[in-house]
Image: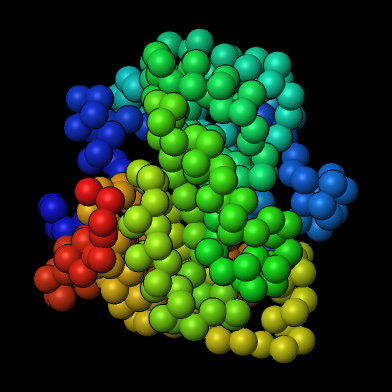
Amino acid sequence: MAGRYNAFGPWLRKRFGTIVYKVNVDAGFTCPNRDGTLGVTGCIYCNNSSFRPSECKSEIPLSKQIRDGITYLSGRYKASKFLVYFQPYTNTYASVNELADAYGQALAEPGVIGLAIGTRPDCVDPEKIELLQSLAEKHFVLVEYGLQSMYDKSLDYILRGHDYQTFLDAVEMTTGKGIHIGAHIIAGLPTETLDETLAMADELSNLPIGFLKIHQLQIVKNTPLATAYLSDPFPTFAYEEYLDFLVNFVERLSPEIVLQRFFATSPDAILIAPIWGKTRQEIIIDIEKRFAERKAVQGSKCACYRH
């Protein structure tokens, strides 16, 4: 599979000369879609239990979360370099002083070489970008903007609370500051055709984005989407269909974009659809097989003009 797509793990290893491991933390931030600013239920699909590790809990002090994560990874994998990943909710949704304290705690831990910060594009401003820029002068700083879709009809459907232009504005604000920019999208929203979703590869390829997470729409319990789906079911990705979609999408994606994630695996206890009956490792193997079978290469069908 070497060379068929630009994967995050090998990219980090080349950059830092060794394997870099992520330490997931919950710094206790909330979200404007939950605290009443934009809403109280979150985005239509949001249940943080669907992706957050069990050890990632805000009631545990941040420094202890980091140290426990480093201790575990060091013991199991002999790891020596780490990225602290601020994952749940919106990790720039606080005052600059609060953010500086949280990020500073993370970067002060031995072996931590940088930060990955999951956030919303409507939760950054020049002052916060200035803070991140200052940190990026000495550390690896990756800001992952949750885009989900470039179509406003989809953003409205999922109750995102911002439009596509907001994402473009955030990317423009972040560009040229030494900060690595990532995006996160969801494939399979019922508001989009397959061709529309694939077209996001073309759009993202011509933006100053260096990293991308993509995964299939999952319907999980205790969300507004689950209520809507159970009352009026709509199609979700079948397993083989999603493998082909991924290959088609990545072929259209700029080879410069580093791929961080290809799929999601919510716990069986809360997952309603799609049910694939595959382990994470089985999915990874099947993705690699599909790329090999089709002799697919990232960017081979890219209409890119940003080079």
